[in-house]
Image (cartoon, rainbow, N blue to C red; front, side, top):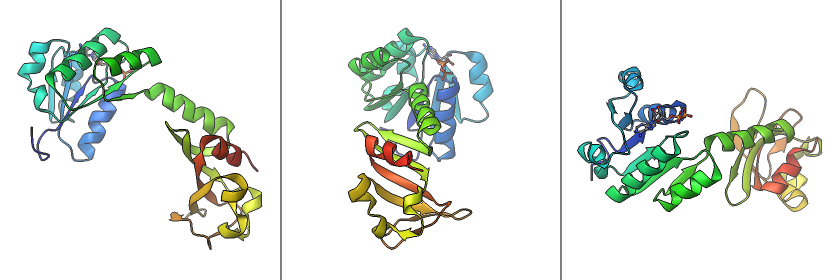
Length: 220
Ligand code: ADP
């Protein structure tokens, strides 16, 4: 396997999602091999990404020639062409790539990807749609839900927490949530401590079971 100071992640498909993944990896200092069958896209990304090649990744032989089997990680960012997405994941799994991430557009698509060898399946549109819905209805400024029904949200401090310390508010026993951090207007977030005083206009980072976090964030 390649050493961590050389190319370590192969990103397949340079649509909006794949290009964002590849670009972020490069900004994080990772070297990336990006592959797309579309010559125009390959040309467009040639300056930003160090290694971009044109190939059809459903073709085992093309993958072999690119040395894809030697990568530690692969991201398959093919969305709309489900057949190409499935065949690519299968080819990577058969080549023995140990950590395969794949984007799915539907639940069924995701299940198939898991069956053929994807280790992690992500649903970017669905995840973002869920987050936006929570932000729209739940009084949350930002929101992330983990798959074990545990969430972290950023929310405005409800009135019952104003002018009290977190210890006095006793939110864990009263609402089943834990405050992780607090933020005063114009200041940075700081870790929450029992003696942290909350004021009107403060923001809180709230964690806990999703239903409890949701209920807490709708308090005014
Ligand atoms: P997004 O919604 O993120 O834009 P798309 O599904 O539109 O994702 O983009 C997928 C990308 O994957 C496209 O750029 C397409 O050219 C590329 N792609 C599709 N099939 C293959 C394949 N067999 N080999 C290589 N690249 C492919």
